Image 1 (tube, rainbow, N blue to C red):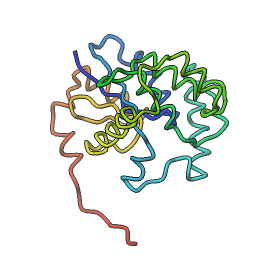
Image 2: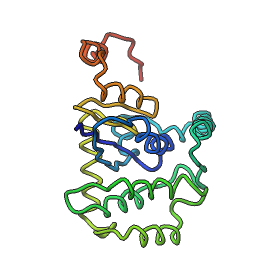
Image 3: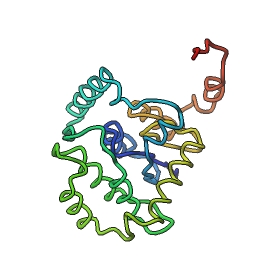
Length: 214
């Protein structure tokens, strides 16, 4: 049985759609998934990037695209009332639902994702967050130091291993980024011949290129 690590931040609609699609896409494969919440904003800061929602034409395209994708896949999706928003409370709640040293299970991750991406509400509405927390009954204090450390450590580990965005699924040390990377992941999990050749390493090697000036 192969082990997958699903890095996600609930702020990403592509991560939500990938989460919803993963079981169907990998049907018949032998695998287990570790769901690992990370802070996308910290990744952006590390790699010196802006988020899609911070560039207005890209924000508009992103939401048009994800709504079309959701419609194509019959996945209910509503844009939250505010986006981008601060996802810390939700990411910490997910971590708090895991025992110390563990990670949140699929039911917890599903509840947190759907809290954001279904219903069109404010993801950080205090009453809605309290209701979600009561339903999930976290094992630890979401505002506690241990939970905050779990999120920080998971984000740091992801960045140091080369993860630059969400969703990213890791299989055998290889990172598969984005909703559109899931088909490539499925091929790798099923033993696709390309992954036995030199392509992964050779096409990932650095090349000479133009360097943008200051």
